[in-house]
Length: 170
Image (cartoon, rainbow, N blue to C red; front, side, top):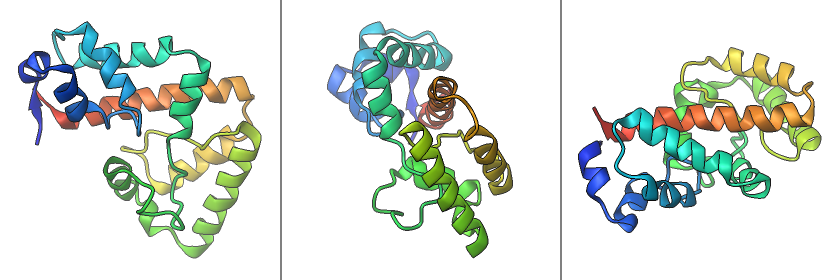
């Protein structure tokens, strides 16, 4: 059930974190730190504050946030290790409907990506098809590590924006 922004602005830290702690995958520390910046004028301001917390967190904490994300379309770990948000997002993108050939390619790309960068491939998949996701994986595995680290953070920002849009009433 969506929360009204006025209600979020009035919450104590614990309630705020309980309401928004899942926006950044298994990283409620983002919501806890953003709480200090209340009141938020609108959802965009809330999103900007949360993204600002991540950007100011330092590389070690950013890497931990990136590592909190699951591999895309990894049926071997689904649904046990996926948050409800991730399950829904991946299903909407058709990642639960991959052919066996696509599953094998996805696994190979996930392994190659993790081997190259040390973290999972992250993409805001809400408006993407499974074919677009595979194409993006094929292309991005060629990027330089520093480019992909920043790209992963950008994608996490997008994911958080989508999740906030679902959680905060206009």
